[in-house]
Amino acid sequence: MTIDTWKTLISSLPTGLTITEAVGILGENYSSTRAYLHKFGYKFKDGRLGHHSERCKVDWDAMDWRQANIDIKRFLMREKGISVSKERVRVARLERKKPLVEARGRSKPHDYKKKPKKISQETC
Image (cartoon, rainbow, N blue to C red; front, top):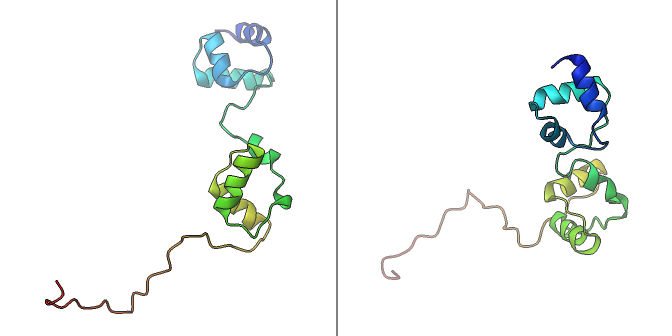
């Protein structure tokens, strides 16, 4: 296709498509379509899952940082309907320099210097 053909096709696209949707409509390969969309200034929607959309909705400063990361994650899902990962909560905690909270049920670190008990033959 010539540059003029690309320009005509891209100008006829509806606004707000993702690159993948534009590829489906134009019937061309992904990399060429993406390059020409950029070249002609088409404002496409970011099609990656969760890209900044969920992160921007969370008021991290209003969180109760005394809770464990998993509890904050569950609160956001249950009360706000916002799905974030435990890792995202952990990063938000570190960015705000909030204290770390140990999760419930976490096992205590093993003391490797302590020798295991010997089992006698009589108890087996």
